[in-house]
Image 1: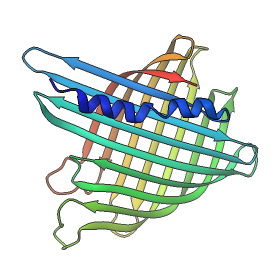
Image 2: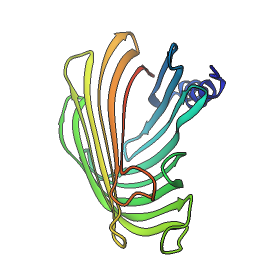
Image 3: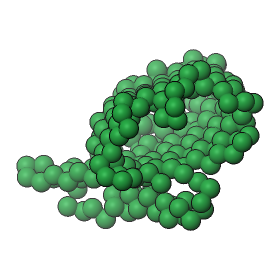
Length: 243
């Protein structure tokens, strides 16, 4: 089984951890999951993710980079790369104004790449301690999704204004266990193509900064490119290192 490519993907995501630790003013988490199976079907699955956060009195800057690779019987069945950056200007401890950019390259999605830029208002409507909170945000932006093939209208890209709604809920079940729910939907204001994503996860500490994480992700595209499914799901089990 060829595993050089998925291992390279994992290293690409995890490598910046050393830089973040040396920066001193940055905190975050690195995630890696690898599954190898053999027998009637030989399969390799690799998930990698790096999340960074830099926060001051007035600003909160976050970045998230992730990749997913699956190979079955020496044939690639999934290959995806994502990046999202957000800067929040904090009016007070609850309210903030955000600017967010995202980029995604999914080999089997029917898109060459997907990108958005949005801005709007957010509010931490509930918080208990440092680990339990609910953030809700909403705003407007622009979507540019490059298609792999020209659509029925002769267009090679989807370009339209969008409305973005999102929620992020963390709940500390105990000192060592955390439940997390992320939801977002981006509604096209011209063609009404709606892209919604959900991630439900549970993580528990193993030892020190090392945790185990189980996650279920769903992505739904209301007007998916021809020949592709509207809904993608993924279940993963990975190790998480916080720093």
